[in-house]
Image (cartoon, rainbow, N blue to C red; front, side, top):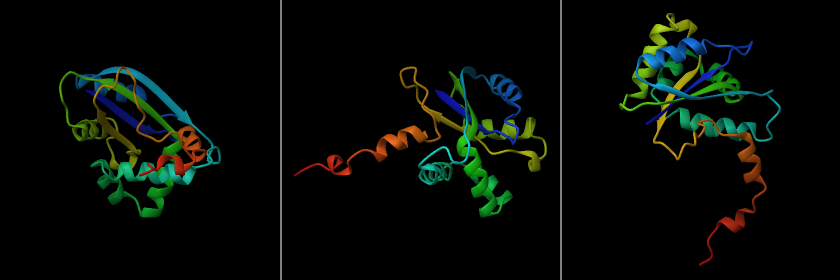
Length: 158
Protein backbone atom coordinates (compact mmCIF):
# COMPACT_ATOMS: atom_id res chain seq x y z
CA UNK A 1 0.00 0.00 0.00
CA UNK A 2 1.30 3.48 -0.88
CA UNK A 3 0.61 6.30 1.56
CA UNK A 4 1.00 9.92 0.59
CA UNK A 5 1.38 12.74 3.11
CA UNK A 6 0.89 16.16 1.55
CA UNK A 7 1.72 19.19 3.68
CA UNK A 8 1.40 22.87 2.81
CA UNK A 9 4.57 24.93 2.98
CA UNK A 10 4.48 27.95 5.22
CA UNK A 11 5.31 31.43 3.95
CA UNK A 12 9.06 30.77 4.03
CA UNK A 13 8.71 27.42 2.26
CA UNK A 14 9.51 25.25 5.25
CA UNK A 15 7.69 22.72 7.41
CA UNK A 16 8.61 20.06 9.94
CA UNK A 17 9.10 17.50 7.17
CA UNK A 18 11.87 15.61 8.98
CA UNK A 19 9.70 15.11 12.05
CA UNK A 20 6.77 14.01 9.87
CA UNK A 21 8.99 11.44 8.14
CA UNK A 22 10.19 10.14 11.52
CA UNK A 23 6.63 9.87 12.82
CA UNK A 24 5.47 7.99 9.71
CA UNK A 25 8.44 5.64 9.95
CA UNK A 26 7.56 5.00 13.61
CA UNK A 27 4.18 3.81 12.36
CA UNK A 28 5.84 1.24 10.11
CA UNK A 29 5.98 3.16 6.83
CA UNK A 30 9.05 3.40 4.60
CA UNK A 31 9.86 6.68 2.80
CA UNK A 32 10.12 6.20 -0.97
CA UNK A 33 10.02 9.64 -2.54
CA UNK A 34 9.80 13.35 -1.71
CA UNK A 35 8.43 15.98 -4.09
CA UNK A 36 8.27 19.67 -3.41
CA UNK A 37 6.13 22.05 -5.43
CA UNK A 38 6.48 25.81 -5.15
CA UNK A 39 4.79 28.13 -7.59
CA UNK A 40 3.84 31.74 -7.73
CA UNK A 41 0.12 32.37 -7.68
CA UNK A 42 -0.02 33.42 -11.35
CA UNK A 43 2.07 30.60 -12.87
CA UNK A 44 -0.79 28.30 -13.86
CA UNK A 45 -3.23 29.19 -16.61
CA UNK A 46 -5.83 26.94 -15.01
CA UNK A 47 -5.36 27.81 -11.35
CA UNK A 48 -9.08 28.04 -10.59
CA UNK A 49 -9.83 24.70 -12.26
CA UNK A 50 -6.91 23.12 -10.44
CA UNK A 51 -8.19 24.43 -7.09
CA UNK A 52 -11.75 23.23 -7.79
CA UNK A 53 -10.49 19.75 -8.64
CA UNK A 54 -8.32 19.68 -5.52
CA UNK A 55 -11.13 20.95 -3.28
CA UNK A 56 -13.47 18.22 -4.57
CA UNK A 57 -10.84 15.57 -3.75
CA UNK A 58 -10.13 17.09 -0.33
CA UNK A 59 -13.81 17.21 0.60
CA UNK A 60 -13.81 13.40 0.48
CA UNK A 61 -11.13 13.19 3.20
CA UNK A 62 -11.94 13.07 6.93
CA UNK A 63 -9.26 15.66 7.69
CA UNK A 64 -11.30 18.37 5.96
CA UNK A 65 -13.83 18.27 8.82
CA UNK A 66 -11.11 19.54 11.16
CA UNK A 67 -10.20 22.39 8.81
CA UNK A 68 -13.83 23.32 8.11
CA UNK A 69 -14.39 23.73 11.85
CA UNK A 70 -11.13 25.61 12.34
CA UNK A 71 -11.36 28.12 9.45
CA UNK A 72 -14.07 30.19 7.84
CA UNK A 73 -14.89 29.20 4.22
CA UNK A 74 -13.03 32.25 2.87
CA UNK A 75 -9.88 31.59 4.88
CA UNK A 76 -9.98 27.89 4.00
CA UNK A 77 -10.30 28.76 0.31
CA UNK A 78 -7.20 30.99 0.51
CA UNK A 79 -5.29 28.26 2.34
CA UNK A 80 -6.27 25.68 -0.30
CA UNK A 81 -5.15 28.08 -3.04
CA UNK A 82 -1.75 28.38 -1.36
CA UNK A 83 -1.62 24.63 -0.67
CA UNK A 84 -2.33 23.85 -4.32
CA UNK A 85 0.96 25.32 -5.50
CA UNK A 86 3.12 25.22 -2.38
CA UNK A 87 3.38 21.85 -0.74
CA UNK A 88 5.58 18.86 -0.07
CA UNK A 89 4.47 15.36 -1.04
CA UNK A 90 5.92 12.44 0.86
CA UNK A 91 5.36 8.95 -0.53
CA UNK A 92 5.62 5.98 1.81
CA UNK A 93 5.10 2.28 1.38
CA UNK A 94 3.76 0.04 4.09
CA UNK A 95 3.17 -3.69 4.33
CA UNK A 96 0.38 -3.32 6.89
CA UNK A 97 -2.88 -1.55 6.15
CA UNK A 98 -3.19 1.54 8.32
CA UNK A 99 -6.11 3.95 8.29
CA UNK A 100 -4.85 7.22 6.69
CA UNK A 101 -6.88 9.28 9.16
CA UNK A 102 -5.15 7.47 12.03
CA UNK A 103 -1.78 8.52 10.58
CA UNK A 104 -3.04 12.10 10.23
CA UNK A 105 -4.28 12.18 13.83
CA UNK A 106 -1.00 10.82 15.18
CA UNK A 107 1.07 13.39 13.26
CA UNK A 108 -1.25 16.24 14.26
CA UNK A 109 -1.17 15.20 17.92
CA UNK A 110 2.57 14.50 18.12
CA UNK A 111 4.16 17.16 15.91
CA UNK A 112 1.63 19.99 15.89
CA UNK A 113 0.74 19.85 19.56
CA UNK A 114 -1.58 22.88 19.46
CA UNK A 115 -4.44 22.69 16.97
CA UNK A 116 -3.92 26.38 16.21
CA UNK A 117 -0.51 25.50 14.72
CA UNK A 118 -1.73 22.58 12.60
CA UNK A 119 -1.07 23.41 8.93
CA UNK A 120 -3.04 22.03 6.02
CA UNK A 121 -1.84 18.49 5.56
CA UNK A 122 -3.53 15.33 4.38
CA UNK A 123 -2.84 11.61 4.26
CA UNK A 124 -4.11 9.58 1.31
CA UNK A 125 -3.56 6.05 0.17
CA UNK A 126 -3.42 4.24 -3.15
CA UNK A 127 -2.48 0.80 -4.28
CA UNK A 128 0.91 0.42 -5.89
CA UNK A 129 1.05 1.55 -9.52
CA UNK A 130 4.11 -0.08 -11.09
CA UNK A 131 6.52 2.06 -9.11
CA UNK A 132 4.85 5.32 -10.22
CA UNK A 133 3.77 7.61 -7.42
CA UNK A 134 0.79 9.61 -8.63
CA UNK A 135 0.33 13.04 -7.13
CA UNK A 136 -2.92 13.74 -5.29
CA UNK A 137 -2.75 17.42 -6.26
CA UNK A 138 -3.68 18.06 -9.91
CA UNK A 139 -0.66 19.02 -12.01
CA UNK A 140 -1.12 22.36 -13.81
CA UNK A 141 0.79 21.05 -16.84
CA UNK A 142 -1.69 18.20 -17.27
CA UNK A 143 -4.49 20.77 -17.28
CA UNK A 144 -2.66 22.73 -20.00
CA UNK A 145 -2.49 19.59 -22.14
CA UNK A 146 -6.22 18.93 -21.68
CA UNK A 147 -7.09 22.51 -22.63
CA UNK A 148 -5.58 21.97 -26.08
CA UNK A 149 -7.56 18.79 -26.66
CA UNK A 150 -10.47 18.99 -29.10
CA UNK A 151 -13.34 17.88 -26.87
CA UNK A 152 -15.33 16.57 -29.85
CA UNK A 153 -12.71 13.88 -30.35
CA UNK A 154 -13.44 12.56 -26.87
CA UNK A 155 -17.12 11.89 -27.60
CA UNK A 156 -17.75 8.48 -29.15
CA UNK A 157 -19.63 8.47 -32.46
CA UNK A 158 -22.62 6.16 -32.55
